[in-house]
Length: 293
Image (cartoon, rainbow, N blue to C red):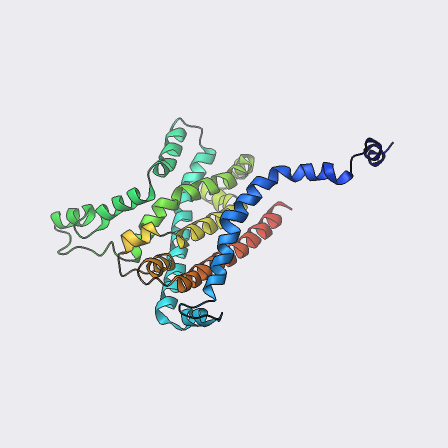
């Protein structure tokens, strides 16, 4: 007897058993709806109501895309995030490769050191870099004491300081992302290539790196989105003159009390990250299929 007949004989509707499969999804769905979807919808609606206006309009968006100051902040955000994504991936790759292939007792130590920065808060780590990079910080004081420079180098309150700080903050996430990808590469492929006469550099260049391109894309995507939405590090290491969208939203809300224009900035930042995430995920899927099928 079929399962449908048995269900009918027992007097239970078929949809009841199917609905039970989705019951575990109800709490997280409600949580996302109440604390994410509804506030985001309110923010989108607020962006179409300029301050002091009664009717909805596109005035705030026109203001954003015609103002050189806000466009400069958008461009600075993209440039900063791109530099951080590149730096995080380049620094994380050798560490992740060592963790994926090493069998020495130092592997646990390196892994602990790589993750240890996450035990401290972002603000604490950022202030640590400020002490190191500022005009009278450790680096400039040491260089001046050695007589190598006559005046402090501009290491903080600019793009360089922010990129250094964000790279340190996001680096553990890049290591974990690349570690997962490198662990999926069969070590026997590397051994076979070396047996056939390939050098270690050639193995890395022609086998390991091509097979981990999806992981590289994932690491850069993660670093880009995290740095684009970061506030504390650009605000502390960048100073008052370094404006990115996250710090500009903060100023619009607390100093200018223009919530509608702040909503526009937040929406533009969100759409930018969604576009980057969509393009990056599609590229990652295409590369994964090309390399494994």
